[in-house]
Image (cartoon, rainbow, N blue to C red; front, side, top):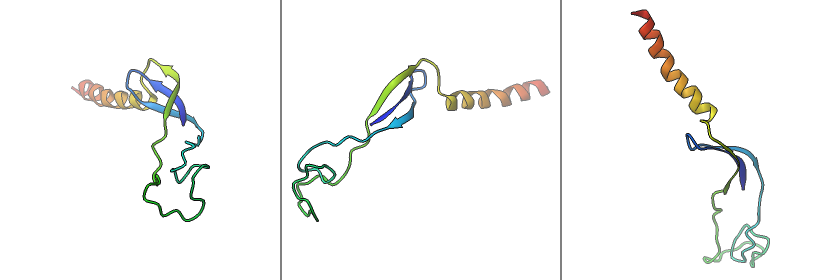
Length: 85
């Protein structure tokens, strides 16, 4: 699980902290409750982890800093070109 800040204007998620949580499924290779304790060769067992869940603990109505910098860098060359004329 990834806790972080969600920026509503640009839709980006910035991670702030992470934590692990066991799915507790008996057919999951990574769970403490896995039924085959060593060298599992069962085709019915889950062998891949799911992507971590993003948990927005902060909501920000503004753009993230990367998007602000990108926007600023796109505008700056235009100002320089217009000023040289």
